[in-house]
Length: 473
Image (tube, rainbow, N blue to C red; front, top):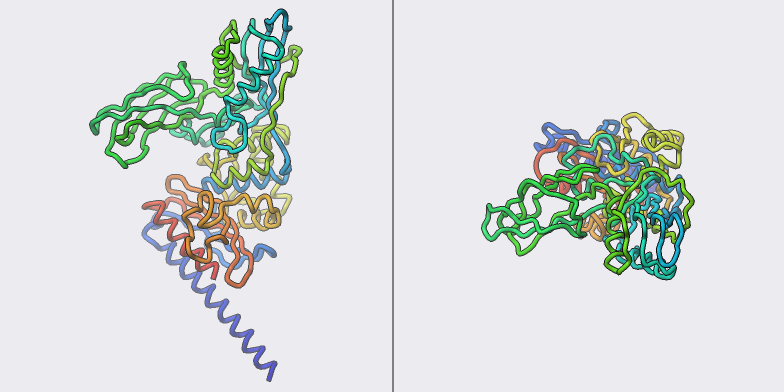
């Protein structure tokens, strides 16, 4: 009798599992045939996070652009290779001698690849002004009142060419297209301060930049749009070019700003430090400068500033999708393996040795901004299985309904407080990948990607939520 009951229970469980799988499969088929994806592509993979067994899939081997979900590869690799306690270093040094209150030599800011130096967004790091004041006091303690030389920003830690293959020109002048250099400052971005016109359709006035960078010039025009239309303005600029073209619209408000990418962070760093020192009464005889070559002369090290730990940086990357930080890790990995230009190939090789299927994987940058990056839903899930026990990695991911880019996702459902995932989006691309625990207490990893879809991002995001709710049943 007991045996018969047990058999019936087992059959019931199997039937329920089969029904749930059928429901998920039908939902995936329905989405693939949706008008939003008439000319597009859908890929999905659901795996057991412990065994790696594929539980459901749709085009899981198809090569797809995953936008910022690409950051999962960068952050996972950095944790595995560099370790969660890795830190970047930035040094202040001088050449020459200090005689009678005069530094007869140059003051050098020697970058060590720290992408968080003076960040305006990273909580807990010293602000730019705090760093300048710290360094001013060091010079003051050495009785330095004058520098007969230059303030030099040294970016030699990384190679000078910071723009990855596949970045489009429209991104380069805007804050999200800020590249990572050997020396970085304040997220490598500035604010372009604007005063919208009193009438819709008229030109907004350019008031300047914050911080003040008088060598930056702006052509073109930004028009005033009705209130509530948001930021639709762009800066077209290029590394090491100081003339920019502005275009687009900003809403009718009393004041407004848009953010741009610094064209030469090592130089900007030196310029701003010199400006600060002079305002504090310490004169500098020569113009600020920069170098992408190591300084060969004898230097006296005055100070060293450490970045937050890699674990903290990775949390910022995955929680808020910070392109600059991901690019810094990508370049650091290339440097670790001996050649920055081979970072993508080395990351691919690293995961290949761990058993990841490499077909369909192309790594051209660390952030996912490159249009040449590709991944497969299957490979992403394989990697997520490998990283499932890495607490630092898993905790770095946004939580549905609670944090980061998933704050408004899965509210009042089984996904809220449960699903942890990286999101990615760019024109025609949306991707989610991460973990959740289903209604039976089983941990799953997943990747869902759409390319070349039509319509609004919010609409596709809502459809993804419905798929994941089915998967979590």
